[in-house]
Length: 364
Image (tube, rainbow, N blue to C red):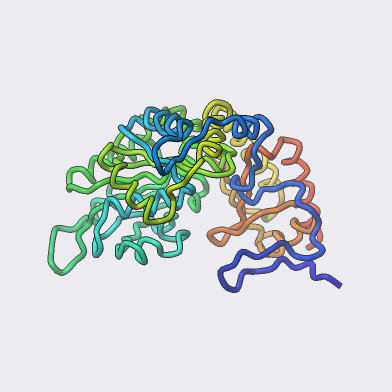
């Protein structure tokens, strides 16, 4: 008889779904799980393309020009993934033996395979702070004077929104103060903007204002914006010129990439304002979970809902397994369960997922 336990990765290759598991009906695992809409696929099929690596793909140019304007920067470069944006950005900003200052739960520290140490020889100084965000005082306390005994501090990094922090939105005045402190001490600034548009929609602040104090910033199109591939890194013309060298070295220079860039342009036109729906669905999910006795739920700022069922008598991994066998997919992150709302999750699916979770908890 096929096992109904969800498999756990023991090495590095992604684990395939378990034999006998039902199809996923409601995918709350991540907003990376979205599928391109028919309209997006149509835009991709009609894209005018060239050789991106040769510099003659007009759709890639259109995306980069639009993104530079959106972020208030001089230039932009199209990358296959957000992780490559972070890696290329740090490799451009820093030199071997230097130090990056970031929150202890930042994606560059927890989720990029040690790329910054392996490829750049940098160390990351982890700062503490509630909900994935450190404060100006915490930053000031960890800025050192120059010494031959310590690594040169080069870069201050923030993640907007803070993923492991619960999808929390850094307030703009805090970002501005952090950027000001960095500049005062001669440090560069970088914003991991994987879910930046979620933050902008939630806060009602344009992306250019949110990222105004940061030398580099990128946006991921494969999360809430629903594209199948791509992220765009923005900064000064000189910075992006140097980042192109790292894009080449990392294998990120592409050919007829306009097919994918067209999906990203479609997302900019059609998928930003609707992020508010994902936030409303996350709030509804959190309210429903909070009504279950013993369930500890973090109030979401955006589209990520973190919760701990241990008070119900059901362990977190056991609840994830039970939900998956009912066609509802969740994830574990930072020691809690994470549910992520996105354009493939409707309000009706939220109520259905709550019914599944209520029944799973009731089994004890």
